[in-house]
Length: 144
Length: 324
Image (cartoon, rainbow over all chains, first blue to last red):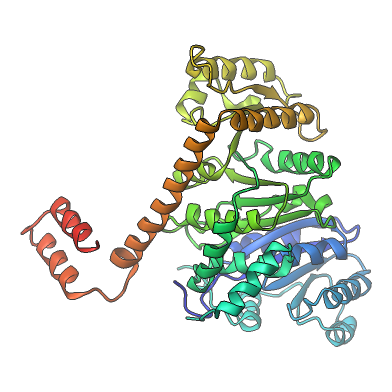
């Protein structure tokens, strides 16, 4: 039996469009697993519609996208629009990868809740996940 | 603890039965979180369920199970059959976290409403996996899909236990899986109804098929007319060769079970046994192992045990008597 807020954090990670630079998101998947997150890993080349359907079926608490190409505003807006249409726009979306500072206000305005570019730490991402999901991770801090 | 009113329960039951993806997904999350408020819903669903065939797929990591599941789902879709998939991946024993990556191989079904895919972590820790998977299968069964595929890595007892929930068990091996001795050692020959050597394009595939066939034949009793003869097939999941033969073999197994109601009954009775035993053992674990507040009699018994005034066998006997 679990008390409220003690369930696992389920995080959907994936990439949209033709971006193939998956090293970052694969690294993040492993770092989050080691902090106790259940990562549902979708890999590259997803469509927004496919990702929303996966989100629905997996009942994930949060979505993470990674971009290393300049098309991220377009793809992120597409995903958020389709999430809204499916009634799952309450699920927070975070972005990572090469996100230009100048684009951050626009991304936040369309509903992106977290942006973690180069230099972000695992602690920052874990803190964000705990904050937006209201769930606690028992392995939240690095062991030792 | 959240309570579920009978009206809420009926509403969730109805939503699952009409295939509502979001409600179904949330119910499975509650099963995974061991949320007891899901119990009345599961009780209702179980009583009206049991019609969907469940195909269990297991084998070592990297054997191509997810790719094969993707191909099987594709095959069933071509026959206009709807599919539910439960993909179980191991959890980290250190953090409890997991990377559930089976969907990567099944991405083409993400936009098909005829396929419902759910990933589940084995969650490590103290068992409970087969219980959670059993309950999740009750839910998928109620969705009214035509076939359920459940995939687990064939390592560890709890992953193997999940196969007890299946009506047909498919064992996936690769040519790298070693010789017949390995197949016998693995202890999976007993549970397989259909065997597949995947990655048929790699060297040694025919030898693996021959070795596996020999091991399977050794267990087969030719004098028992009602016995199912497990086929050993070759597939190459990346280009779907052998997959239609595999679907056919699974259909022949289903037909065999239908033609031998006693064997099917036996299998369902074993499944019932596994499910109820899972619940009982989980209740015992919760009460005697995980609980932070021990009742006085149990605490005294533990003291006696530590001080050697009694022994574990006697203590267990007394606990079982007192829990009746």
